[in-house]
Image (cartoon, rainbow, N blue to C red; front, side):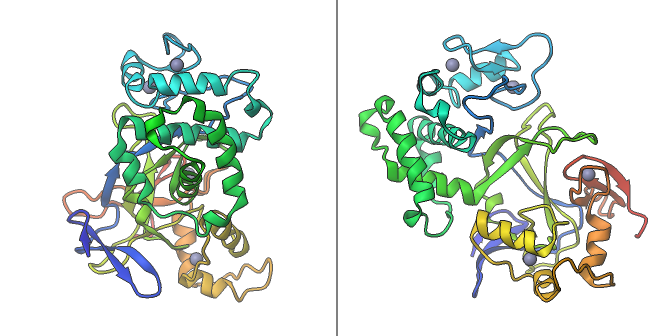
Length: 353
Ligand SMILES: [Zn+2]
Ligand SMILES: [Zn+2]
Ligand SMILES: [Zn+2]
Ligand SMILES: [Zn+2]
């Protein structure tokens, strides 16, 4: 058992593997962890038709007036002098700047490749940069679990090999970067990354992703299709805006597992099953899945099943949203009856308590 915070600890559950359980009785709405990313990289393809409207360091929307460009490449724009300075010593180091400039050259073979591959190239550059500047962070990254059997997957080794071959002329010789390392990074990112999304709009279109981040503790929470916790992020706020916050939806007794959902909770059984297998490589055996696995295609039983009641209470009903609702943090030990949506930010009074 490992104590991660005073609020929860890591244990091994037979037939399930590692899990995070409450170390004391916890209350609905309680924030149990606020975590900064170990690695954060833009979700915008290297050859995007339009320039990114977000700061390349903090991913806030760029202000309409003054912005700050990288003095070397001028391709990368930042919201403030502070973001620019921090980035030049970390995520947009001179090594990253030089490597990305090479990859984004119009003659680069990447210009013909899929958006997915172009974003994977950003990931590999960001991971190698981590190895050069903060090697201990790369070690932590490599200690995370990855999608199963990636070492037999051409879908991972193909892109890893190709991207590594483009970057390798720029790699410091003593760093021992390799196609195997690139493949491992892709496999770890697939199993662990969280998306930071564009601001919500009721008019659509579907929100796209600004950036992907890896949060080494938050990633340990197991999945449940009826979670008792959910994640929030506040990318437009002033400080620590790329942190992820995990808050409880319901009271959790000491010793009970804390789970989040790896996808929107309103999806039907077959969609959830497909996404969990494709993106995370497992079959969910939660209580809800056990019940819904026996339903016929398209059947949507109207009933007082506990998970139906949960969904009607905790799925946001704003147009184009269906985020998950969780109570605001308790005040003076009293449960708050205002629910916040983790996707659109809407606040709603919970009339059922
Ligand atoms: Zn910024
Ligand atoms: Zn630059
Ligand atoms: Zn499930
Ligand atoms: Zn919402």
